[in-house]
Image (cartoon, rainbow, N blue to C red; front, side):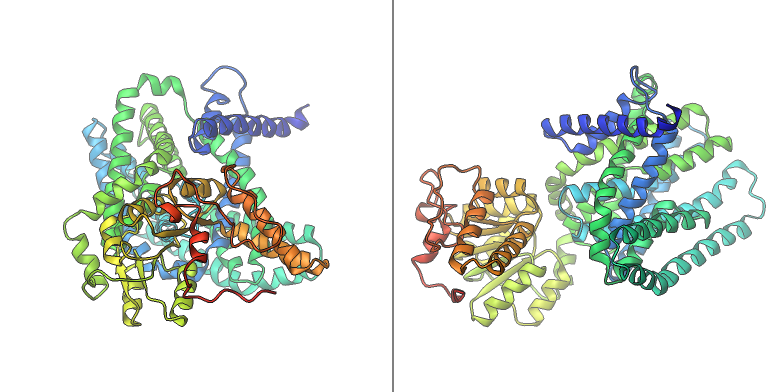
Length: 615
């Protein structure tokens, strides 16, 4: 049975995570909290079944590697370089300021200076794993806040190297500190150069050779070797295992195989990342936390609140807009796994004692638990940030032009990413007046320079939509996959103009339901729409006539988008349905232009854009 001990541990951990995640989902909480609580229940601090901590940590390391590797594949070196100024400036400010703040907090609760300084360093480091999981759960893995948060996360991970080199100062046994620090930083720099430059040169070639075999198994094994091998090499060079895996993903993202690599690695990522959070929960000792509840609550409150304020300020100082700065700071306002590393080394070196080690551990874990809850307050926190002195004036200066007077446009486009830009290009070709609302000052500046009417601001703010002309406009196109902002924009637009037609992007089927309930006429889920393109083409290749294929697609759209609205009729079977062919809902405001009736209204007035030519 001993030979199957690892298998038994894996089954226990996954079963506990399944139960905890299901309960959390049922209660309307992030499943991440369920995973952590599952770890508490099977940890050594609670009675009942106890998983072997060493084996769970081994499996959790795989989760760290696959999660960071997949994130690196989704990102690109170009995207990281784009935020390098923000990452270096904001990350440097955040680390220094948080370390100083944490040191004062430690001194305030009566710890000696060495222990307080160690707590400050541990507080400065966030968990990139937690940040990634939170962003993926919100459908924001490719958002602006994800880019800047991960940029600062890389800087934080690199800062662990000089922190470890400086620990002898706290013990009074510094030795030749400048030489030690220079050696550590030099090793880290060489390791980074070898990983990035060497990887860019050799990894795409290796993947190409393996892909030519035509064996998917060999390709998957090569991907796993790259992810885990680079992580191990990074750790051997004095960097972190997670950072190495992330850099390996960045290297792979520069090859033509990034899509297939991501498809292969995602199932492994999701499974083993879950185990990581269970392992985090196993570190919690409820008895110790109960005996030190007062000081633990004080420390975690100071850590989360202080880090949120400091990180937001650091992002603003780096030129990030208020909304992105607040959201990125919210996902980073926790203490990460490297806090455990620093605390463990500090304990073995005599810098801290057992109780202080336990409190640092408890504060770090509790800050991770509070992270999803903190994100729920993100809209209110964003409004507070935007009201800070000088922020509005700074952002207006960034767009290099005063805001235009209220405009009259047929269409108001909220968000000028890939979807918004495509829509804007088509509207330009059809000479249809439109206004863009975007939170990126650089985008607004570029659009105004090109003669396009654009406003800087939050699409969910009523004054911004008023100036954009939503009160007189015909269509509001919300090309922002952020559910909170999209819902706020719909409510504000409906208050200004009940007859406006609203179309919005949704990151998931749950977001589709939420946006329809808020008042959107039409909601588009990009992944589902892409699948319908596949379905239609495959049916045509199989011999189905164009009208028949179209009826199938319309029916599937009706099922997907309108499954919670049985009062809406099925589309006609003759293939003449327009869009999803919603029927008017008599209980909703706006008469014939109520949510669900937008397409009927569109048929009664000339459209500025010609209908597509039937096949």
